[in-house]
Image 1 (cartoon, rainbow, N blue to C red):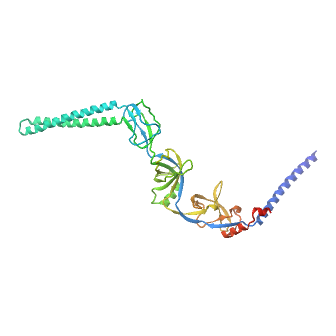
Image 2 (cartoon, rainbow, N blue to C red):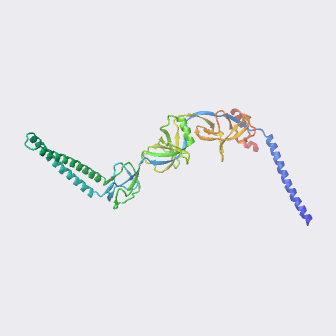
Image 3 (spheres, rainbow, N blue to C red):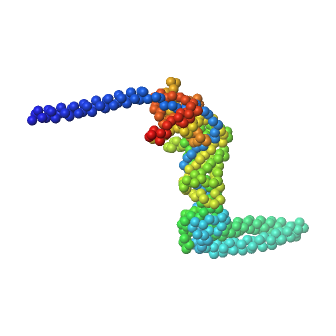
Length: 391
């Protein structure tokens, strides 16, 4: 029994040893094959600089230029409304009517008071004019004249006060017609007809202006620094484009006309704002969009051919040649495209040498055979096709 167990264990150990030996042998053979394999042919190019208008993308949100709460400025019962929720209204358009009877009566009383005082003042001034002639001839006492003068001045003061009360009564009567302060779109009616409203009742409804309209967006502080460095003194009225939520481009170009004076410490961004015309009301308050902001001045930036840049989960990368012409994998950062080139923001500089063709067979740290673009074309033409290989 023990002998059988020993034999069984010996067989297992022998199998493991054989498998390990075969694996090591395969690795050695593969290494020799790789060593004997000729270096791949590649085309190499130098990183150049190009004068471009840089652009920066950021998430943005559409905001109404004016967002106005429509309030009651007097107290009374809400008698009528002259619009539907969601309607577009114009500045000065009547939206609500607060019961005007009380305020109209007050205005009529004030008007009558003004009329009465005007009549009294007219009579007093005529009397004073006669007294002025009589006092000169000593037909009346000076004290009587002074009394009439004082009465005239008192009536003038009373008339001024009555006129102010009349103006105030008319103002309150005007407030019975609640008007739109801006052009825009009306929101939900918060207080319906029949309710008693006061200046403290809150907003009757809210109006969002639609044309023009704002788009606010946060720009990374590093991008903002690059933008400021390129534009320097010419930092106003930058061109802005919008990509809507459905992926389409908004046809009208906007202008960046505001930037905050601080960096948000929690996000590391600077808030900017652009203004857009919105004649068809395509942009809606609260909508999320993608903003593309363009610098005013061109700057020299390193560029790399799009065909030379590859990408994996870690990001975009190129094969950069070291001083011994050995390719090294270098990760880069880009900030948009310019024609057939990536604009390089990090990882490469002018004069760096990268592989532009023949990338498929390149391995980091392994030698390559550098050829010209013309030679590469000839080599491609000389390679046998798949059909020829099958034959």
